[in-house]
Image 1 (tube, rainbow, N blue to C red):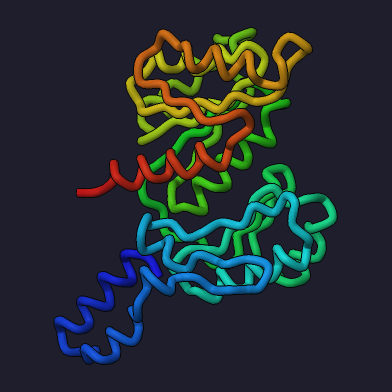
Image 2 (image 1 turned 90 degrees about the vertical axis):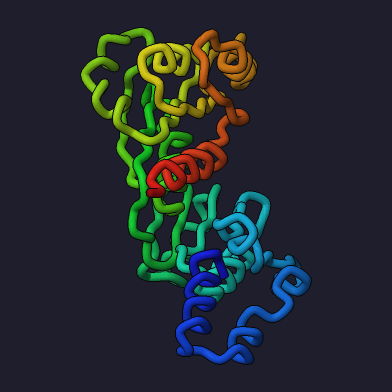
Length: 255
């Protein structure tokens, strides 16, 4: 249950369409008993009410059967959002598709959404430096869309050919939030942050040669950005960036 469902329930009580007893039964003791015990995991069924976004399955380190069970349980909550899993392995793709024939599955992003995507609220632009950054950028884009944002992509505009970025200035300037994904020296977020005043979350990737230290060089460069208004998530954390950007877009679109 998320906040929109609670609001609908309260509206139904206010108009007389639902009795107080029925509403009480629907809410229960949600803060105290808001989880589903699956044996191997306790699925947080109250997170959507607390934060507006339901729990997400991190598939890495889990078995295929566990991922499918968790997705089924999340989908059964009917939170108004799709059930989402990230970081699927290659071996999971076919079984997940078989279990959920109508799912949205992106093999590049390694993400799956089970259930109807929400109506979009606000816009997010995902800007990536190079094609090697695509898996992380795709994850960020997939998550932002699943969390309700309209998503635009700006690909392959790294600082080695920075003139390519100017062609998409309009997208950068009109989005409610930007996700800028880059590896190597991680300079792209500083450049974008110096061009527009759009809220920006930078994502360092583990792309680069030896001295990039698996993305640490890009992470430190982004943390030390001289462009104001740049926030940074952890290395390769497209998921975290997607959630952040979708929430910014959601807030920006409020009347």
